[in-house]
Length: 212
Figure 1 (cartoon, rainbow, N blue to C red):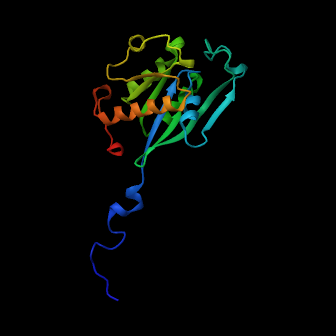
Figure 2 (cartoon, one colour):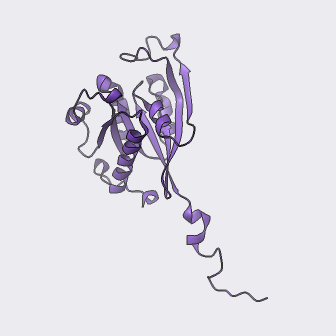
């Protein structure tokens, strides 16, 4: 039987291939100081059982770890948290939560590879604990949004007060909410996606083909 060379044959049109229809995968970092809620946020929003590497705080951290204001916290992330959320049929976010304790910051340089953007979580009672995360992403030109974790709906500071205290760029979005809740965490991630697509982060063109 003779076969035509026509491009009408199944599999010749890229639009019908599995690869062409696969959703874009985007890596997002979830950062912030110790005890701000990174592990909880990943767990709240992930559609798969999250992977975490929490260990109990030990005597090794005495005098090293800053637990001021969160002295009742008994565990800490020592490597990463991992979760996944499907935004729509075209976009999947892979979430990597970073360690909050200073002695584990060396891992940030490995986790940041391939990340398109980041979320920096802050606790208004301990704003200074998130300065390192903000400096890290600003110095590398990685777009980020700030999520103010309003535990139990409590808002101790206004958005403008947080922006001034953290000395944030005017283009850096701030989202306030109880990020232990799935909807609030999802809204925060959508704000980051909108920022990336707009290309307005820190005045740079950060739009990526994966978000087109």
